[in-house]
Length: 347
Image (cartoon, rainbow, N blue to C red; front, side, top):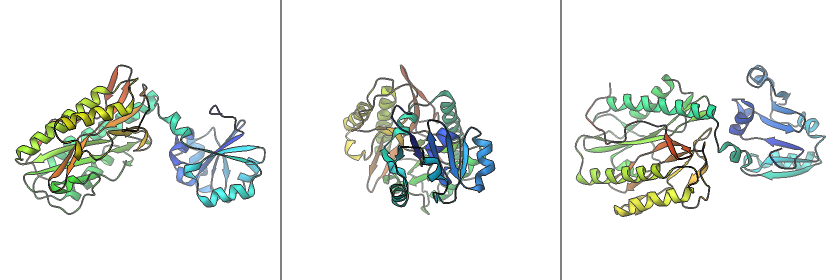
């Protein structure tokens, strides 16, 4: 089992539950796998859903993981692996006190399997990205001076769901003017004024899988510094995307992007890593950072998202989701990255 000598494996992380079983309500379930059988531990509310989504899995009904069924399931195991990062202290203590077996903590075992996506997964990510592209085309026609950040964010969220996404992949970021200096700022009541940048970072979940995209646009005429800085960030993003292919080490991409921004005198304003993996989660392996020694392989999906953030001025970030190929990458977020300067209105 997973190339480890295990009698059984308890799985608690919702994304891993979905990945293995197809069950979409993993917050209220656990999986228990032995060499002979595979169980979903949940309660009677999900009996019909499990029968529909997971016909190959046997339901062990148990409320609030009280252990009544689990003791029976685990009785034949001499050892049991568990996801040590996704189990509460209370559950771990119960396992120690009630099961006569060896507990084996595992970290990122299933995440290392999920890191390479198959074609079905990639198609779902492509669809999530395509919806994000459609949303971008619409939203840029609905923005003008006088609207609030939160109005734009709410409209993005509405459009993503209206076009087929299950929900937002994360809290949509819309920050304008000085607020754009906050890499993960929250949209608020700030009113957009002419001469300001707007950074929009958003993504939708489509049948469990997601894409991630950021674009920075301008409202009205901007300063020379803004145009220069935008060209620099776009150049760095293009450097990063061009480096993506099988066999490349993630930290080398991060270094290439940083070196590009350094050449424009902007390196000190790049405050985060170059990118991250995406799939069932918004942040998963591999990280594209200074410390990541992971070698890219075909089927991995990552973001490339350099940005600069200058207190009292604002910020610029440009992000794409890309699929690693043998000799390059497929950019699945296709929204225009050339600077869009708008004077349209929220319609």
